[in-house]
Length: 428
Ligand code: SDX
Image 1 (tube, rainbow, N blue to C red):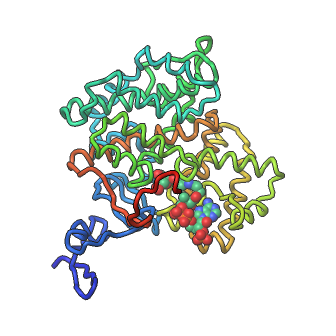
Image 2: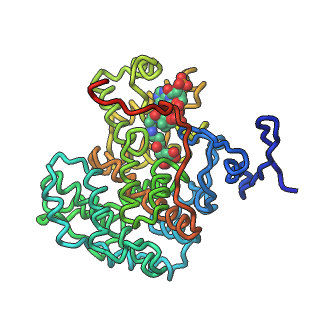
Image 3: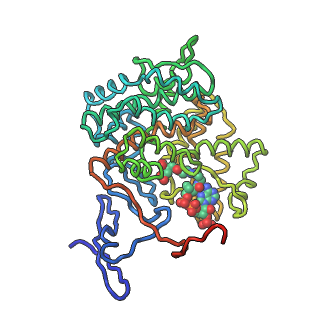
């Protein structure tokens, strides 16, 4: 017999169905609440509210579990490629070799960006933050592909738009960097795979090829896989709600990029390195900075620490921390920021304030150190997060559109002025 939840309001008892997910998560289905009781719920920040049912990603914050379509993140990070994981998230199953080849070839075919878009880059100042450039460029793709304006045109058209976006984001990301450096743009090369092509476009020059290092490619694959999806986080919820108005995919993903930019979300990886550099330049006294993070009167927070869902450990941080040691050792890099990060983590995890609030390193705490080792500049870190998260955003948008979910439109509780008459300006 299915469970029910009973709510007593003004002497009446109302019953609402309880739904249980495949991993035994439970929710009270309140979709009829307002119609039957006249009440709405209030949950600022949606800390207790499920926005949808999804078959894409499962995470258990207490146990530090993260699965993409049922596959543990630890196995995917170790054994899969990013493009393989992108296929898994978007189409729901690990691809056969033939499916992977077809998917990968289609992406390779669409890596070029319309030549007219190069003028947009030239209009940006050199100091333009690449996330601002990327969000604009992705939305601008909709102007070059007007057929994409109807997201429900056909399955083939939807797939073409998805492949175009997966293919062009690395090109746009690398060109955002080249533009900031005032370096000539490097075009994609079809002989490279996804990660190799991105590194080529980032670091090659017309006068000198970039030697693609398998250690770097392997680290990049792993980082992108670890960022690929994370159920209903801030930017994915943004993608779902913008997409629910039937806006085109380019505009929808552009909104997701903008949401990710915030330092409390994807922007944290840049903020972590800036924090570590500040502590390093301040003499490396981590106890002083941990004390600042605990001080309610001090706005300083330990960036890369804490998570809305993970109240134990972020499994991605565990994998990235180990990858940090591997990559820096293989590349012969001794980065003082890594030592400071490890000291900071040790002090914080032994501190009652952090333990009482279940604050642990999240995905952003160590990722920047690897990006630095790969030669990626700090302002590009959140762009790297967007590159990784793109297949997750696309898969969540695709699921939402294919489930014909209604336009997102939350309710509110009004706390403003009660009705009053207009007053002529002379009498105010
Ligand atoms: C990502 O949702 C996702 O899945 C996101 C993400 C993904 O893959 O999409 O995992 C990616 O965004 C990771 C998070 C990156 N952000 C940061 O590292 C920024 C620093 N962390 C925080 O600002 C904070 O921890 C959040 C935003 C991540 C979570 O905030 P919550 O869940 O709203 O918790 P909160 O801000 O209410 O904090 C609860 C308590 C507060 O203290 P009290 O008021 O109870 O005394 O913990 C404290 C906070 O002050 N706290 C911190 C802290 N994080 C929370 N104190 C010091 N340093 C911190 N980092």
